[in-house]
Amino acid sequence: MVFRLFWLLPFFILVSPLWPDEPPASPSVPAASPAEADAASLIGFTLENLIGRFGPPKSVYAVRGNAEWQDDVVFVYDAADCYIFKDRVWQVGLKTYRKVKIGDGKPAVALELGEDALDEGNLIRLSLPGRGWPVELQVSLDAGGLVTAIFVSRSDF
Image 1: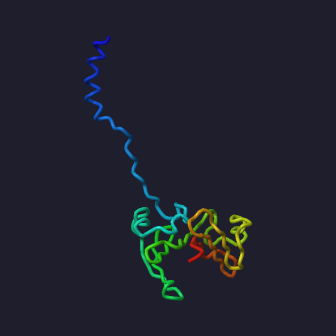
Image 2 (image 1 turned 180 degrees about the vertical axis):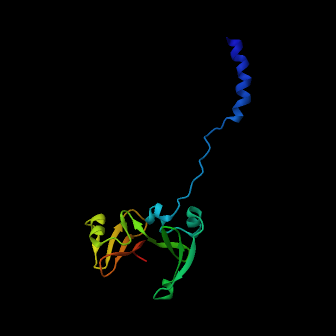
Image 3 (image 1 turned 90 degrees about the horizontal axis):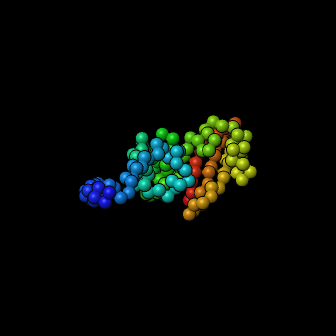
């Protein structure tokens, strides 16, 4: 019996370098769009982070603000627009957030966002927790009470 085990020893010595110490890391698959990620977590992303995670944008355009420092460059992805000031994302425009989507009525928005949401007429705001800076959800409504825009942004910017 010992003799048989002795013959297996060279086999294990020869095969052990071929056996990986750790399982190979699975390649990380980027999310298809920022909407599939937690939009609030994108606030503060650098351009390198954004492109590394979602790839190049479908298009890019500029938005003129009331003052020069309010000008933004916007990276457009299928489900979201990422507003960039200098080299960081400060706002994400979405087509949907949770169960709120463009075209929904104000009662549906209020029901989904709950009592913590602040109703300011044509704008509903909700503070989002757990960030290094204040982040909020802003839902814009038209005169008929329908959602026209959804943004997650730094509220101190």
